[in-house]
Amino acid sequence: MQVQNDITKIESGFARQVVLDSGVDLFACYQCEKCTNGCPVTFAMDYEPHRVIRMVQLGLRQEIARANTIWVCASCETCVTRCPHGIDIPKLMDYLKQSVLSQGDKPAEGAVAAFHQVFLENIRRFGRVSEAFLMGAYQLESAKAEKKIDVKEMISNLKLGIEMLKRGRLGFMPKKTGAKEAVKKLFANEKI
Image 1 (cartoon, rainbow, N blue to C red):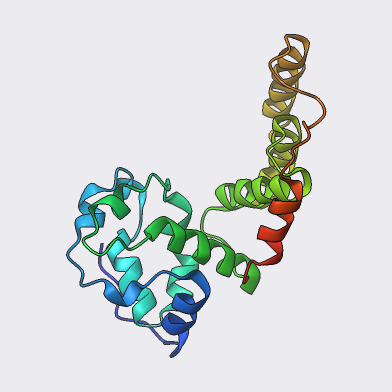
Image 2 (tube, one colour):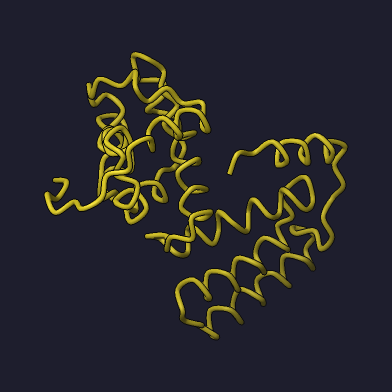
């Protein structure tokens, strides 16, 4: 996919800030495209991973905020294993997701962004994922993000959740974790 030439705003210093905050040395990238050639989900991306790196290098923050690539990335780390410099692209994508949300930009993939936020809030609150809370919160947040409520689907999912609770496949209350303080420190140290 081509980057359009009607770019109006380049943010100098954006790349440097991304490197400092994320810890990903994206200046080591020389666009060999090994990351893109190994990525299993490029078919669903509007910009391939190597192009996102170049866009960050060029300070195209607004174009990155509108791209779906950062939300489509599966974080499978195939790109990292193929990169001759070991550039941690999933870590970069996670940073960019948080950056979009903290800047108040509208995410390109609202439902994925909703899941991202609900998942992190779940970890922040309980120290681990609580499936029951995750499912419920995701249903509400994704409906809000997509601005459509599919009552039929929500009732179907609620019935499925109740059936899973009855069969012991889903815990109602979150299990305690001994690492809650360590998780709290991780969130306290986040830069965004």
